[in-house]
Image 1: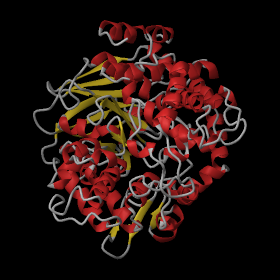
Image 2 (image 1 turned 180 degrees about the vertical axis):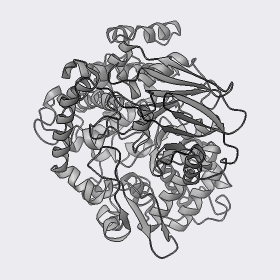
Image 3 (image 1 turned 90 degrees about the horizontal axis):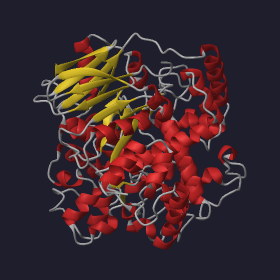
Image 4 (image 1 turned 90 degrees about the vertical axis):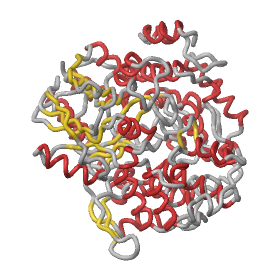
Length: 630
């Protein structure tokens, strides 16, 4: 089989048994890999209603048909499960070298179930795997774990994905960290890993990727790489990393500030990519086969946050630990990011939880008596750094915030729910939807909840012929709602493909335009020997999104879950788009249009049996009908 190895490594941690499954060629062709194939495995393997932190839940590490090839941006992998944060489909992506090395080890994915009786790690290599004891690793940071696992297996070039104490302590937004600084951050996948007493997964291999048309693939890779290196967006990202966009977002009024009360931060320049480049930047390594080099490695040479870090903050982190908290100390952001990585905590949710707490503190809902003496006034970065450590260890008030803002608000009460900025239980990322309304619809409808990577963002469509391959040719207003249902639906389908191939959005982002949907087809066809057209590829994305939706419907999700928090329905108080909001009537209008385009029931939000069957998802339609869900 070209493109895919055709093998899924199956690991039962309760029984300590390892086996392999074959990937059906038709599943590879219609679901690609990554999110698509992972969603089918979870739908078929999990019984409805399983406990996310129980033995029946599965933890998947998935790659796609272009992983490990010469195509730029092919290095990503995804971790999937039933999410403890939302109760629905859990999914998180990371890059680096783990994905290619999993492919070279001989697998398209790893599916782990059960709970080990003691801490263990998995080593998958050269077509085989073994479970090893990890008792002495329990309690170690991710960086310590990676070094020790490499030493134990005698493979310094292996990739290690691990959890720190945040995952061990089942923080609801714990992440999985690999290659020292690549985080599969969202939906609590690290908590599921911790619940299974799985400390790490190491992968290495000497295998190669067999492709259908090697010469054509290499020529395409060379062409794409050249386009990336001459494109303004990627040039800026190479120069200043993902935080290069901070000044632009601030000027547009969409830099999340003060727990989403404001859209601009008066100290924005302090946390910008340019400032990082001029002050604490040490080096710019890259992921496998990628010319973009967006990774930042930093060193703080003096002050209370002095340290030679092996990681550096990306945009989401400089906003979540910076502007969202009214914190203008880049050095504190770097330390907070480092601690989150060491402890395996998602920086988006960590920052959102602390911002929520700071607003509760400001409004008098909590006091120093509740916060273990911490002064949670806006901008107090010393308290932020201490609180990250307390969250990871579930100590004192950190134990409250470790549950995520939705559960924390329920515990605090007194109207704290008004300050909990989340969708489906997942904290909103650092993209202000009141200044780009399509993002609000994306947050409301994404299977994972509030994620910023499931569709393109409105500013990329403020021009004619933004995405002609799928019929988006008319210039849009980022502050309007007209046409946004069509835009989000189509972009979600394209990015479902992207997240199943799997390709990095900084290479294949449809609004950047250095790489086209036709290029996606060539990548897949040259790699896997398929014959995809643009129309068929977009339909594959539709198939994948409907399967993800079916999983959530099975778990009890309805239209009522496709909503936004109160904060985002209120007018934004500061910045260039002051007064903008997404009221319920506007959201409902976009949702009605979106459901019509999707072929979903407008009352329940569920795909119809006819829609599922038309996409080849009869198995999902049959189960949902038997459960009375459709």
